[in-house]
Image (cartoon, rainbow, N blue to C red; front, side, top):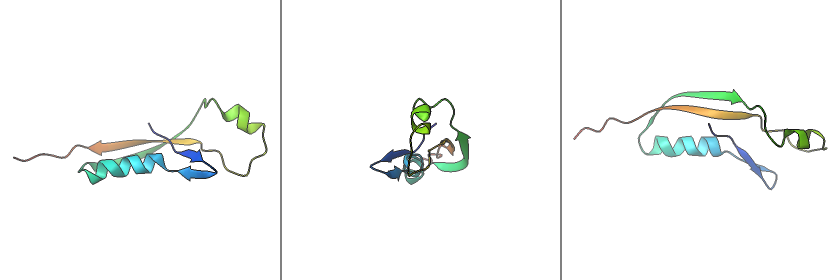
Length: 71
């Protein structure tokens, strides 16, 4: 599982970036499972603060198929 992160107020799509790297080297993307994130350590901290952003509350599971190497 991999989730996205926020840096300096902007979302860094680590999940999609990671998935694209696999596709770029030949893996086939079969499925994307989006899982709700539970028990995040920082949730209680951020729920008590005023914020100007949405909480990141999901993670990705990518189902990839390894390329067949024909020699």
